[in-house]
Image 1 (tube, rainbow, N blue to C red):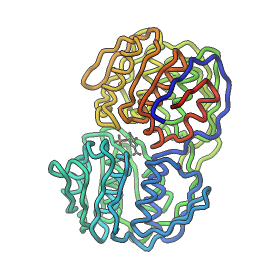
Image 2 (tube, protein in one colour; image 1 turned 135 degrees about the horizontal axis):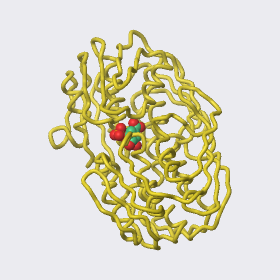
Image 3 (cartoon, rainbow, N blue to C red; image 1 turned 90 degrees about the vertical axis):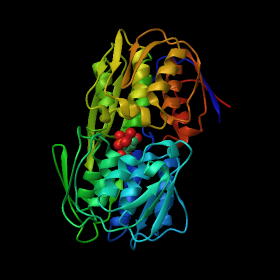
Image 4 (cartoon, rainbow, N blue to C red; image 1 turned 180 degrees about the vertical axis):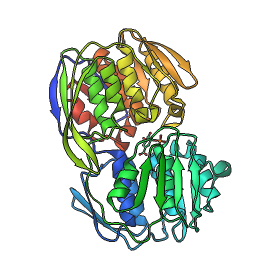
Length: 426
Ligand code: S3P
């Protein structure tokens, strides 16, 4: 599967109850199970490459895992030194959170990943960890994987992060749980908060006040996690954009996390004119429900606040911006440059090749709404770039290459897309 030809779609109306499970929550569920005093139960775990790598890693760290294909049960007698190199594949979340978990574990560990992950910055976690006594290193003075970690005693800290990153925050919260005193972590804007919600649900003393989190180290192991992972709003959002650019269409996206730190892209699409409603159906660890999306003409917007709440959805949102009336602006989004690809460049290049006028800035871009035209776009190995331009194909037809990456987060993407249009894979 290296190339897809997507045909333009006519109006459609669908309900989808099989959007891929949430990636962030799936990673965390298997890692946090290692901190519990009994068997954790995880239903609807995301069976995609990134999260299956995390599951494999916790097995290598000595967790006992049973999996009947529906429910994964995990118990652990504490983290064991691994015989294997721990391979996070394409996942920054995996690598950065495991740094926090392993920096206080007994033993020596090597974390690696694919060629894309081995080029992504790790100093954002290695620097604060080193400053509290962790022993870890990597290429380029600890910035690039492979990383080596020798578990050590960690000191209590008050860390003020310069970036709003849930990966850095989660890494430091995991380190704090085993530090030698009460720790605080603050960030410039609230980033996604699954770690705080899940650990609190497991009985950890993690208190959030505004932008500051206070963590009291664990006195004993935590309560096991019992979770059904909701659908991933970042994956669901591709289908929201499909509706937003296809006149007369509507969709019901079922069982999605409605955590406010995750649905900002849907709010942005609402500001652009799309009709969106949220139906709360459950509340365990976080609010969960259905999202109903209905087509309405799109108008341009500026996106400059709460960027970390929609950072993963900006490539797909940019497709809606390309189809909107007027000039849309994305600002304060420099973090896009260090995602699975440099997403400012990949979005700008992809849209330009599809006949859209785009102006590139250091921290974002301006998109002049116009007529999308069929083009050939390479994903640069980035799942969200691949899926965004495939969705653009619903408007005008599109050829997208380098598709294996879609398996990192949304293995049934094409199966769902085929409900909307003709898809030729080769
Ligand atoms: C994630 C946090 C975000 C996001 C990534 C998943 C997480 O990254 O882009 O896809 O699960 O913590 P940053 O925290 O680096 O912004």
